[in-house]
Amino acid sequence: MSLRKLTFASGGGIWRKIGYALGKELVDLGCHLDVYATGNPMSMSNPRLVSEGKADLGITRHCVVDWAMKGMKPYEKKMPNLRAVITLPRTDWINFIVGSSFGVSTYGELVEKRPPLKIMGFGREHIVGYIVSQILQEYGADLEDIEKWGGKAYLKGFAGIEGGPTELAGSVSPIDAIKKGLIDTYYGPAPRSPVWVKMSMAKPVSFISLEEKVIGRLNQKYGHQHRIVHPSTYPNQERGFTTIEFPGYLIFTRKDLDDELIKNITKAMVENITKFAESGDGLEAQPGIGVARNWGVPLHPGAKEYYESKGWLPS
Image 1 (cartoon, rainbow, N blue to C red):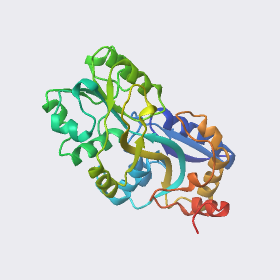
Image 2 (image 1 turned 90 degrees about the horizontal axis):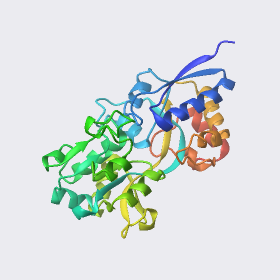
Image 3 (image 1 turned 90 degrees about the vertical axis):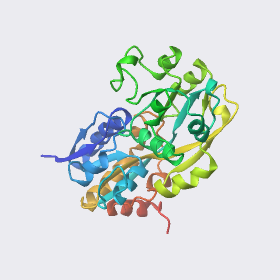
Image 4 (image 1 turned 120 degrees about the vertical axis):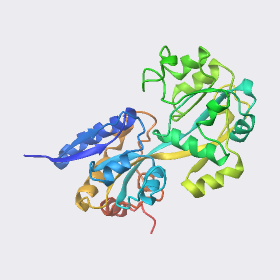
């Protein structure tokens, strides 16, 4: 029997693992899933690939699909044919740490003092880098300003993972880089990662916070949610901080895909959600209302039909 061929736009790391796990479940539905993994772990290109028919399913953050549908930057045109399939819940937010010697605890203080940071992070091709750029713009600055302040910006991830700059070729992680004094500042995702605990213990650092005045603007402009992180979350922190929070990962598709197919894919993912959680990275394994919450992205009719049958959508 020939299998129906589908393509999944992923990325590196956990997203690729999720794609492979999905592919195994789709065999029983008569489908073969090719996982198209871009070089970027959290690629901004996945909505475009799905919208243009180069992929049938994709994974990203909810806010990114929302931007693509509305034609907001970085997307040059609207992609109204995108639809949500399932949310893979994961408690996640953005961390931005700065060496304590700079005496800054908020983004506002950072932009006001303009310290000569040696910063490692991600550029705008990465979702987190793009969002950090959005945050800085609310304070009248941007990623490029870091070097104008007399600092140095390494915005290609870290060496050994994403081909970091030659100056950091001897470092295989942000932890090593901060221990060696190659950097004093780092931003990135994955608060469940031990990286943040180890960096908090390696050198005195502060997790910088969003101020109240910009939280509402970030929500209104970009749909960002925020979270208050307690000081006990990481070692050696006297203050908590407010940051951008993600509700999880969104599996999405196009509205023209067959309703029955998407309904069956949704059902397969819900019934096997523990297998996706085994992909790691803090994915939550409990099915329920959380997987049906689409955070502003319209549900595909097939997915909607399945969630309605489970009673997981508001009446």
